[in-house]
Length: 179
Image (cartoon, rainbow, N blue to C red):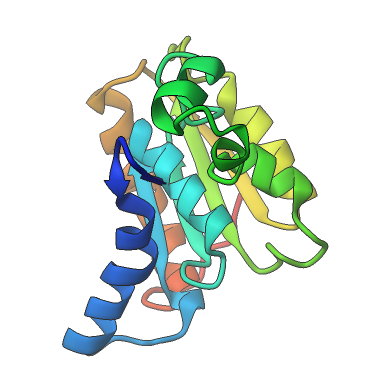
């Protein structure tokens, strides 16, 4: 979910092209507090990347089974293969780096849920790290765990469970607090 030679213009697509197309072609509320980005696994990491790179586009997120950092199998490999050896480009796409270096107020008003399967050994440790960084940066976040590992047995129930909160946050259902 980054703009790279290896991966194309995924960030531009998600943060500029898609919102522009939606505004031009659909009858939507233009207020970013009523827009959300969500994903699971690499998509959960992507949701975190999008909201931390472009906090004015989407103000709400669901990151289900997200990675602690974007990875192609380790930081050095990701920097080398994903970002052509450019460490600064990697850090400009790493939610933890972005949240830890953000100026005060950059992420105020952003809210989301970070969730994972209790038996998801590969991703479970990322949730508290991401939650701490998000909270320190000014975001309002909650964390949730579900029975299961890195499978749809977690992702389906997680999404179903989080829809009420999401609908309330976006103003399309009765508000539900982050808990």
